Length: 260
Image 1 (cartoon, helix red, strand yellow):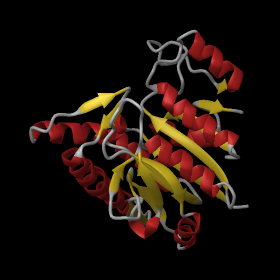
Image 2 (cartoon, one colour):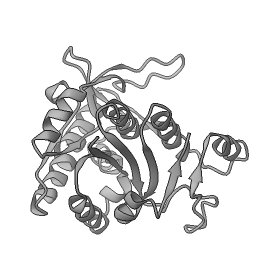
Image 3 (cartoon, one colour):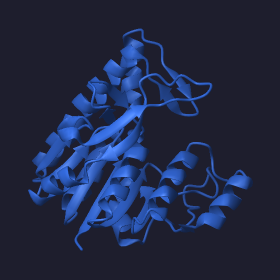
């Protein structure tokens, strides 16, 4: 079975030109099949503020009204996605930029919540693994923006960590899949104030203990929930760590490994 690397890059790295370049150099050097999923929240927020469009966040998740959907589509699927693709091309990496709407890649429905109206936020229903496989077989690296659709003409803003998890689950049937969540930290930290206090392995029991003792900060919980969902669905490896250490994360010598 061929290897596939699915790598999600955090927004803070995208905002930093030098760190993004360092990461993309390592991504381009990585051999084999690969998919890059990106977010880009800070730039969208900055543009919204400049345009006088108020932004609302609930538990770290963006409320996406009609005007905000226009902005995140422009920023995520437009500027950030194509900027990453262009940088990869300059590194000799033949990449194609996509959203969930392109080639019917990711189908979703509008999120329903008992007490919160998230607006045009999508929860994923299906991933076209056959389409992804076809593109990978053309020796293309996929760069996926966190925009999905419902097949009826409606776009949705969708959490990039969740997209990475759903792609990994869908592709694990055809590939030996490694899912990497890369961001600015060296891994899951036991102490948020100590950059080097990385927890090397987290299994289900330890994760429960860490949550009960409030060691894991709120922003990390959705990422870990996605990581465990992937592992429990058959994804071979899930690793969380620093973007600039991508090669070391792939080799398993850095970061936090997630185990069922």
